[in-house]
Structures are given as structure tokens and as C-alpha cells.
Image (cartoon, rainbow, N blue to C red):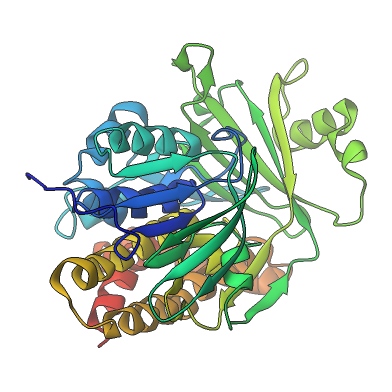
Length: 414
């Protein structure tokens, strides 16, 4: 698709706060249409600490035209089935994503770390001279007037201002763009934190799928494999991540202490000798949705608009879906002089499904995996077994958890 870059005039330039996967996706979508973009990133690089790593079918569909999907498939692990387990009883249900073959050309999940997706997006953006990505440029605040927006930015050379026609806040849960808008960010913070331990130990010979959710009333966990990396790039051996809940008040140094780490992972799966734990990370978990994704020329997408627990791998994907929806509507305004009412539609579509699907599903995922009532736990497990055994019910279930149903719901909102 041949594109002619538009003028870099500030009236048509889009400012984006945050060079994470959502911000870079919005930038690529706009740049491919010839729209001038400035991405302002607080960090000095794309950090490679363990974050999101699951890509769902609708996301692969959206990225296909730009070539990003092919690049991700070349680097990631295709997951054709995933398991729901009980920590004491073993496999409860094995879900075959092939049941979605009539609904998507990508009837599987892809495991690829967030920072690698960012690297792919940055590489694609090099084709577009009208898109600039500025590192160590932290957005401190944003203001707007009738004709555009002004971002106040902290740079290595000191404070600076950047002007554009629109600004998208993709700057995470503590978004400065959102704090500059007349919106609330209501919800709650979980009492426990999530601990991620990464190891090169191979769990596959013990029957684990590449993605596993493991229920337990005392200490649930999740186990999944990602490509990993070494000095040369991808690590062919791969890395397994194990996620545990931990007490919110325990000091990090106690949680990260080697004996405590080994004890926790050995209690999950005993083996002779210590585990080679190559990375450990600890973070708080929230469930929140902004009261509005638009305030005039200021807009929100990704974690700046909604945050949730990671069980189900939905948060990053939901942000991607925000970016595609928003960039399409914004491009029509800039290139076709369409009404800015399309941005109100963006808010209705994406905020509605954030509340109806993203928040509900991720909260349910956590409640189910930590269920303490033995009767309720067995009732839920029986339901999962019945779903996995019935192709019709399995398809309906997977349409929801693979995020296809949410996309259809959003597109139906007018």
C-alpha cells in the first residue's frame, strides 16, 4: 500500500505518550496512513523485564496487514492448546484452540514477550520518516485548546513543550495524560502481589502445556513458556515463567531471598537440585477502568485506560485492540475531515467491552483459580471438563476467552 506522508504541521501531528506495545501500535497504524506522529517515552530504552507475553487470535488478525504478525510468528511459540489444572489433582481440562478454526485464520495463542513485540514495531516504524520516537522524554502534563494540544515534557536538555492536534495517552496505569484529563480511574487493588519466577528448567516432559492455569485454595499458580533471550537475541531453549500470589506486606528482599524462591518453586514441582531462576519480578495488581477515554483532544488507550490482573493474558491484547480502533477513527478525522464524534464512539465501544469483558473475565479467572470452597471448586472443574469435551460448547467458551466475542461486541456498538 503506497502512502504519501502528510505535512508535519502541528495541527495534524499526533502526540503519543509511551513507547510500549500499545503506543507503538497506534504510532505504526497512523504512520502507515501518512500521518505525522511523535512518540514520547520516559525510559531510555525498551525494558526487557518479564511482562505480558500472550497474543490472542484477533490481535494476530489485526497486525497481519502490516507484516507484524509474520514477524511475531517467526519469533514466538504457537500454543494450540492450554491446560487448566488443579495443583493437587493434576489436569482438569485441556482446551483445544483448533475449535476456532472456522472463526479465525489464527486458531491459537502466540507466546512472545512484550519487549520483543516493541522491537518489531520499532523496526517497522523506521520506514516512516514522519514518525519520531523520542526516548528519555517523559510527559509531565498535557493541556489543550480549541486548535490542539500541548505536552509539557521532561527531556535530557530540560523541560520542553510539544504541540500537536491530538494526544493519545499510552503511558500506563500511572498515566500523566489521564491525570491531565477530567476522568476518574476507579476500581480496586488486590491485597496480594504477583511474583514471577523465570527458569530454564523444562516442564514439558512432565506433561505441562505451553500455557497452564493451576488452581489451588492456598497457593494457585500459572505456568507458561516464552522464547526467552540471550546476548544474541532469542534463546532456542526458551524460558518458563511461574506466577505465584504473595503477601502484599512481605518485604521484597524476603520474597526474593534465594532459599524462599527455591522453596516456593520446589513446593510447586519438586526436582533434584536447585532451580536455575534467571529472573524474578514482583508487582501489585489492580482492576480499574477510566470513566471516559476521551476528553476533547486528549485520548486514552491500553493500561492508561484500563488495568487488570494478567490471568488469561488479556490486558496487552485489549490495549492493542484499543489502538487499532482509535487510530482508524483518528485517521478518518485527520485525512477525511470526518466528524470527531467517532472518538466518542471509540470511547463507547472500547470502554463498554472493558467493563463487560476485560474486567469481568479477568476477575472471574482469579476467583476461580483461588476458589476455597471444595464444593464450588469441584463444580467449576466439572463444568470445565464438560466444556472441553463438547465441541460446540468449547467453541462458544473459546470465543470469549480468546477475545473474539469482545471484538464483535465492540463493533456492534453504535
